[in-house]
Image (tube, rainbow, N blue to C red; front, side, top):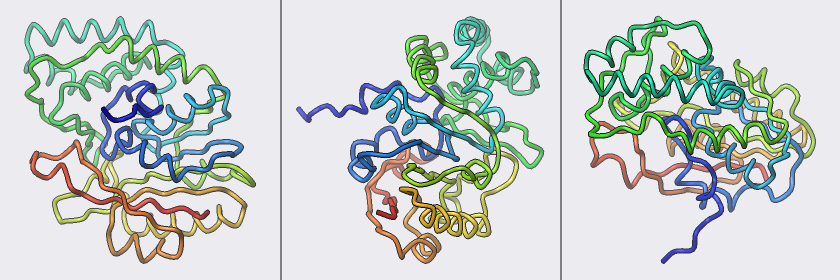
Length: 283
């Protein structure tokens, strides 16, 4: 039996997110700095690396961000109002049990404003939609069809409470915005982990549309400039991305490692394994 990695003790991300790193952390963590000051992550997504970082040091000062405002709101609700969230999710689970399709599409069409309702809707849809894929159209409307799960875990109370404890255990600042703004204060000795939407490896393999606008080539070039700035500021920087020509061209001057990864979000199960990701670090 393989030796259990410390990452296995971290709570599972409460949302399934394209490019999630939970299964890769045992391999990735070998490339992380052993000592550092603050932790910055401006493409938070499912938060697997954040949870692992807090598991290692619950008091760590963490500054995390994502451009998806609903996702960031969900993190604050999980941290601050987890009891209300669990109760709201129980309501979704009951409605879904009575009329799966009707209830799913009714909730998908709603636009709640209360933070707990926004968060529970996001978690519910993430647990019941096709492949757990978060995708919005150009107007920012969630448009993924219903999945075909026999028994989706809509109310993962244990996982939500574990995530809430870790998020509330340290000095975690959670914000929404552009990555450059989120990284403006990073400096000497800080650890910055960059996990932007991946560059597509084929014409049909793009997972860049989380906010109504794509993460395009110009954004990747802007990120490469930010990477160089962070290096000059004395930060320890690690970036994950797909093994593509644009990524190697823009980041090939740094230390590059290749990892094998399975992609859980793929409409064709045969396309979920055997892919390579690059891990790029400046130390």
